[in-house]
Length: 323
Image (cartoon, rainbow, N blue to C red):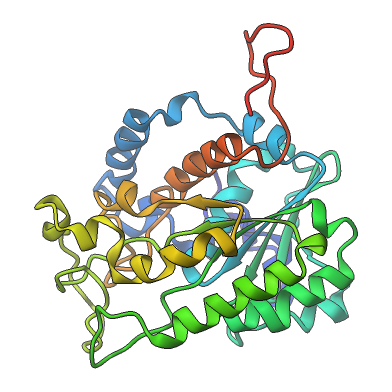
């Protein structure tokens, strides 16, 4: 795959976000950030052990064919969108991204000032993958979902992968989730129940593990880059709070059944990937790495929860579809 310079060198600054970028991962490719360290091989070994080798873009495409899959959330979810569009690129007539809705309306969905408005990669058979950057559940409820309900045809048939979490810090108590976090997610869950007839199926995704020097690995509330990441020792020692995904995940757990139709549990599977974070920080990963593992897990959740389309797998008996 071409690097960012080769893929985007011909694009003007104004159009670069649409003109190029698929599979360049916003210049966050592991080989570029860690030359001669072969981090992708270590990640690939983990993926192969997980069963990723049997997972194909064709299977995921069939599962979402005719729908839009929305990746809606903070910076971890935005990077997850990058992984999804790259994984499905062979089904894209063009690698040029498009706005999620009409350009004027799309601009109104720019929730985070330094990030572009929603982006989509159009695939075959009226299928899309789209990313919407939104850091707070209150904005999902009040600014994003109501507009998409109004503007997107057949929005109810789509699938939303949703997460918020990193932007609710309690810096005096960095391992305790903010009361605002639970309050906003509870309000979103209640709003969703009132509007269920007009909304897509929602998959709630855990916030991925962080690997800072705190007991639970969460951001310590102080300090600045470069941070040095470390293995999550408490997890390996069987700490029940860390094994549950930290106090953040424990706080959300009672809400998930009202918030979503399925639960994408990525935390424990991602804990071993402590040394493929972006240089100097411990919350996001280079690519390919954690986000590709999440795609594999997402496909399993869609199948097991019977979300999206049934998929006929090669070699399966007639009438035997993989849900």
